[in-house]
Length: 302
Image 1 (cartoon, rainbow, N blue to C red):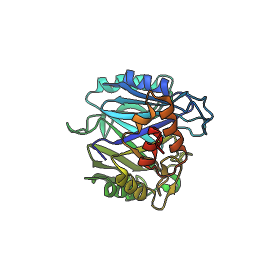
Image 2: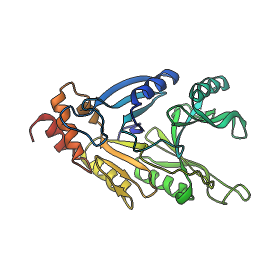
Image 3: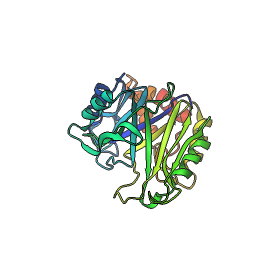
Image 4: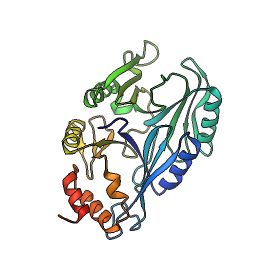
């Protein structure tokens, strides 16, 4: 796993291109970097037209994302949101306003005890963002995924943070703020954070009943440099969880991950449609991904 190789994947019905264009327009340093397509030779489980857009890779504020056209099976909800740490109240105002347009404000943009300017918003595509001023060192990431543990998984935020810190290289817990008496279940995590490989993850327990929980609509892709690394992440993350198809899994907390080769985009975005289709079809037949087998399919040598 190389530096900043944890890549959030946003599942949409058929809005991946629109969403990527929107985010790269409103966030700093936005750019679309690659686009992949469904197989042109075979049907797909999502029921999308052959050859239509499968994924759009894009970068915003130093964070890579994947937008996926996966069909109507899963809907994004605020159980996973993204902290966006900006330098000034005016930048918070600008970004929050853009995200809130045709969206839904979950917490009004205002001054709070933890920030001069903070707000929580669900954008027009259903993705949730927590815009906050300050609280970032010079080398820390601007955008950080935030996992909210509620309902059946309430109280497990600390266990999740410690598990992930143990799995990822140089992982360490850097903050654990707990609920005190009268605020919520005492001792559970109000705000916790780990750092690893130039990236961070935030987790929090919420004792409110929200009516939603983690699902496949937001997954975290782990980009692996070789089969040995892929095997290790697959084993560690899926322990006591569920192994799914095409490199997908759910960990024991219900969070979805994709454990994939770091160069998977080279196969899926190739201009050689036949080679691309062979690689796609090979992936569709797998659970844990086998890099050599996919490469052989792409090369036409299997």
